[in-house]
Image (tube, rainbow, N blue to C red; front, side, top):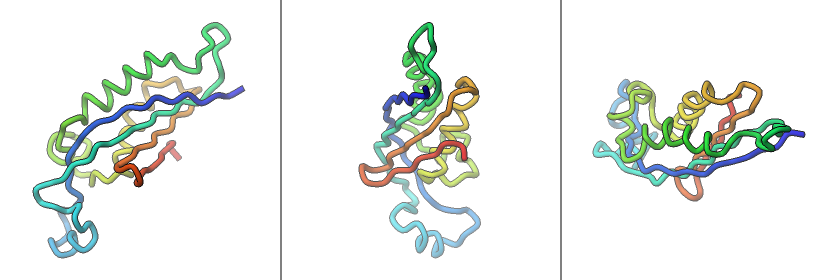
Length: 136
């Protein structure tokens, strides 16, 4: 039987949505307020879900202490109170949209989680806007 376990976390970060290869006018038209040259911030809420078989010995799908530690190392330490465009190498040439942030988080965590387990990232940029990515 497959079970999904989830852990919530959060981080605060600033970003600017824009493309270097577009004009200021086009960036403003497409990204509007999110194109502020002085950046803007969000209180991101993160849900990391892991699905798999329950281990017969431990009763766990994954040890939640391990998941908590992975989230801290791979996400919170890397993104919290950072300017994503300037301070996070993954976004040097990648627009830090919620979609791209969720894929980056997935790609950072996937190699650290047993391959027999499925991973899903849900990232809330605001209480009403969120994205989900599961590697597909």
